[in-house]
Length: 480
Image 1 (tube, rainbow, N blue to C red):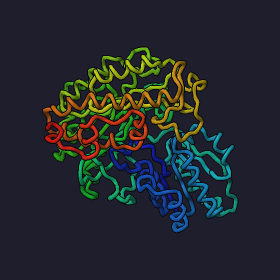
Image 2 (cartoon, helix red, strand yellow; image 1 turned 60 degrees about the vertical axis):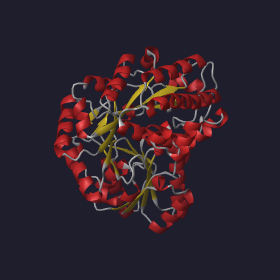
Image 3 (cartoon, rainbow, N blue to C red; image 1 turned 90 degrees about the horizontal axis):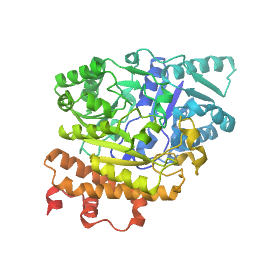
Image 4 (cartoon, rainbow, N blue to C red; image 1 turned 120 degrees about the vertical axis):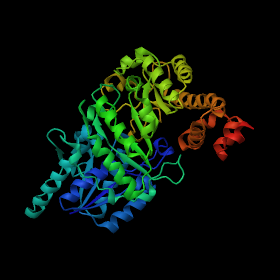
């Protein structure tokens, strides 16, 4: 069968500020389908910034037997629109929807849009999607195709290294990390899952609080392959929690160091693991890890405990400090929009975020995923039912003292004030790498669509900020 995997044309202006990221989940799905004899096409409409009209043209030209789309909550409406287009062009086409949102909301989807969505692949998809295709072929041969079914594998894949990503199906020229000119960006998964219980997080729910790590030698072999065959020189570790097992993680660092290539590596992990690893942070640097995201989420212990973050405030402070001491760029986030938030608590969050002094800070609007553990505490405060806005950018909740509009304004002000306070320190930064890296990053942040729109009401930026954002000043110009 011919299977067309399409990314939905959804954009909210946050993640896309820094780079054009490849759809790694599709690469894994495609690999298992190819091994089963199917013809697979990956059409990354999102990264190509194609419209629904463009997608309709591609659907008409491909004439696929199966059209499949993945969805998280904010992308779900556009994912559904893609499948509607496919059905309108060919009512006989088999439509498949997978991802986090369909995994938990399949009953709602099939009840409301069962005429558009033939099948839902719930949970980890590689083997269940493969098995679904086998079942479809049998039913087609017997003319008994049954629709509106949810496919889910029993348990998780025991050995992730048995999977064979279909790297050759990607258009590698479009994947770039904008901070490094002329770069080729790859995404690599070194593990899956997380055993923590953060109440706002969809991933711990999706992976059922489990964690599995790949073999370090296989991860490095894959990176070498991507470097040699496709010219990848920047790697994003897509894992929720790559550092979960200290011994395995250190072996991976040692193997990266032995490679000798020292590519640019971007990753995220938990703050307490940075503190745990302070004796081997030099290995992070030697391996090529230059940018680490740690989700601090809040600056007071009560809120962290409410979120079941399993993190101490001081661990977050220490993690940012330790990364700076090793000249590793630190990025973190703070969540606003809880029922107890007040103008004073938001102000305090900004003050402490500035005091922590990460290189990058994101002030995120709490997204009330309908399946998150925290949702029962939020449902009475949700003011926007449009899933497109559940993107951590647009405020969709109110608090007891603040409206959603209040949160939108506060988030814009937090971004403005944080980065304005960071600029004077940045222009005096001793590290040439950090200075140049951050100037390029801040230029992209200041020019990003969601911030420009949000900051209109705040008046003009100070001259130095606006000039740097508009022209991308070098450090010598900024100082002068």
